[in-house]
Image 1: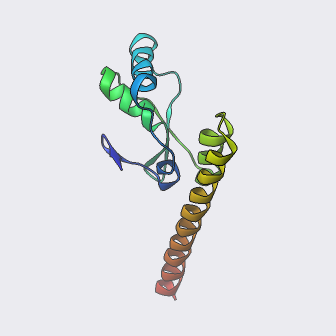
Image 2 (image 1 turned 30 degrees about the horizontal axis):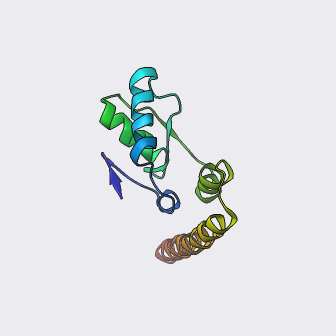
Length: 121
């Protein structure tokens, strides 16, 4: 997914964006109070704050970014599941999707590392 000039991180794409009244409330809050929490970028992609970025664009407010240099999958889980009150079934569905996408990401990263190591040899 692309928002503004940024692609979104696969770890973020597992979770839904705010919509409807919740999104409208976020836009109104950002319009009234500014962006209180920076949007996190990891490897040049939006890791946390997709809805905040959309709300900034909608509100005509300049977004603020911070770079995240940690483990993106753990942060995405924490920011999107641990901080929300989800029903156990919903939580389990997200966990399965999260684990599957993380495994794919890790496999692609290992393939790139192996290819780079072979190119250097």
